[in-house]
Length: 399
Image (cartoon, rainbow, N blue to C red; front, top):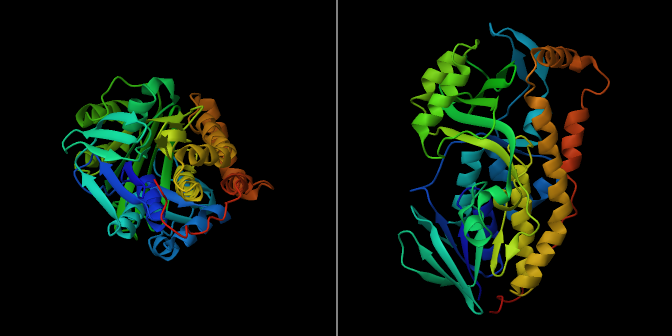
């Protein structure tokens, strides 16, 4: 039997554990956070490939039940007056859910078959011909046959097995912050977006309008702030958006009480290979397309399906499975990353003149012949893979 350690308990890790358990693998997930992490922005699935994987996992009904039901989003001016409307399918795809709700669905689906080690992380990886000896920050060392890094843009496994982040992470010149706030605007299945030169702020309703999520984006080179220094991150955000109009000052004040404040650069991960020896990477750790692409979660779900299926099909031969996993996913990943590049270039113009032109364009968009073009491009990208049909393994994989 193959004994697999997965780093990361957000989306990609539990999705992989779900599939591996079906094929008879023993799975352990290690997660640095002290417990289950709720919160986060809305994520979406679109097209046949995404929905087919959710259906095959047996969680499509649960995901649909958790959908946000988001409608069109409105661009507003500094006084909050709507200036233009953006269609729901551009932002929400076929199914949109909050990241925390999706993570809980996946956790509930795997907690009976997967060991979860919360509040711990991998300290070192020592591979030999028979497996990998893993030392942890807190737990005793253990042996595993395979190690999978599904631990996001700032992957610890990628750093340990492949090298420092600067070799693989490409900053797209933006930073973002997302956090929960009261729904003080009384938004009902909608959101408001306010844009100025080099900056964008938004708020949208969540959990059936009982609360809301605030999201801020701003153009900037890499900030000299530690990823875990929340006080400094909030100071940077306040310096950028205080006094800029609309609801920004109120949202910044509510930020101080948010239980789930998130701040990070917007980046992509570009790697020639997603595996080294018995270690492989999945999701954002291997090929993050950026949060702007709208493809990251669907890409992670599809990647987990393919990686687990190839490991089972190869009867546990990780070399063959990892190579085939990359062959199947490479072109799909490239398309999703291209989407992220394109959105980043359009989202944050530094010129007020360009901002005014874009606002004018969005105002006219409902009346233009190509009004659905962006949504169609996103759907075509999301459907840009033919899913292999992995039959359940008749017996447990051999070592």
